[in-house]
Figure 1 (cartoon, rainbow, N blue to C red):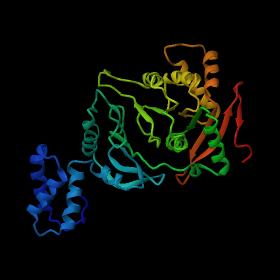
Figure 2: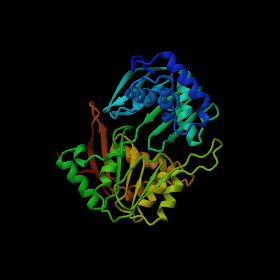
Figure 3: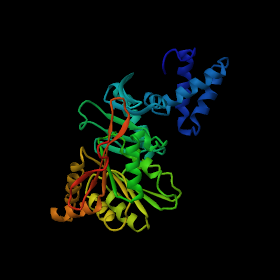
Figure 4: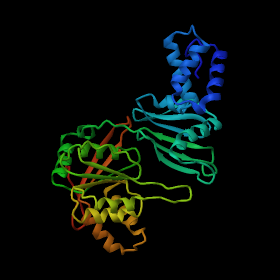
Length: 362
């Protein structure tokens, strides 16, 4: 616990910690129990200090320690642990180094508390773990020997609030996106990691008719669509030996049997791109997806490469024709120096494979 938080004797804190840890296996309400122990060990401590200290001890002894304290700041979206040493955060869209310094044992303890309750394990046999907490927060862990300088943690908080389209651009941008939705264009949003692809999908989905049935398909569930008829599917990584895994490809196929009016597919990274392209070109108009790419041309090339990477081994010419048939519009998003996300380009894809700037000279 940080020094100077409250005027609590260190011996009192040591006794509270010792008593709590001796019975923690049977404690169902840790903060309440720590409050009781503080009342017992320091009966003259003001109630406001008891509440503060109990919460801090809960974070230390049960929660994620310093990581959780950083996440309690609503302006923090990411917490990044780069091995032993200072912790970095993204606050209001900007990366900054914090004064929090973690030792190796504290990082491993945080990893265990993050992935253990999810039925996952991170060890030398499973050195890479990607998971989602109950509130939607994403957690990525990489352990040595893959992480050369020590265990790595990336925690990305899930933000429920949906931004209006006007946050991504001027009136011309908003009108162009509205037109895509009204004309039921199949849209692929592209950009770098953290550029705002998922945030834009949420904003666009808020404009869909409330009576339509939307099926979302994601590797890690992040979308929070506002409609009344939204069905959410999420891939499952499986056990340490790979048993029980359900990938994006299987989910795309399952979604087609759920009578969707539109599909909203999270970032495609592999062979599932072929199923997505097939689905979008066979009647599910007005669907959305995202892709990690740098330009409109790169979107098409990456989709072609991913489609060809699967076991189907289709010829490139056939895949290219399918991609052109499936994708109507590609929207590029990027993050500015101040952390703001904005739409940088909107291009239509013609039947001949050419791109048309839908923003004109604006």
